[in-house]
Length: 164
Image (cartoon, rainbow, N blue to C red):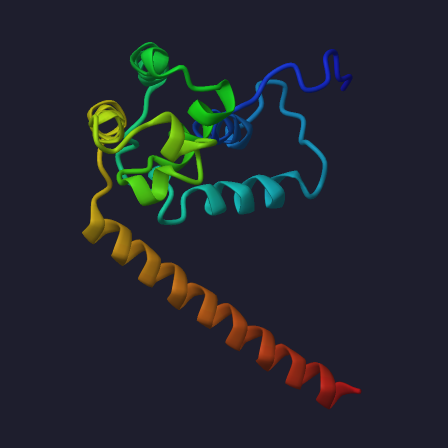
């Protein structure tokens, strides 16, 4: 594999997730990839699907049309490509979540003239709003999974110490 153009574009988490799903599909030629490819793909897909990521919601709130809609809708706000990418990845739904994403947010978007709320409403209209109950459940599930993994690691350490 050759890199033709280094850093020629940025990808959203959705685009990376979509590509990972293609990688997990069986290859037509029957060949297998590198030995650890499946592990890396699985772990990255699991990471992208953890709450509070928009990709944790099923069915996925994004599709290919979503990006053209959000780019055209945000054009009037004169955001950079990186700022739009972060908005798509994080789906901020309040000024506190949006401020770290947009450089000089307070100066560029005045709270008094309503541009902050207009921007947030537009994001919610196009990207959807998070299902807080589903996010809480997903975060609780992630916490339980992490706790089980850490307990399993401690048991393995004890077993390894006993064998030494």
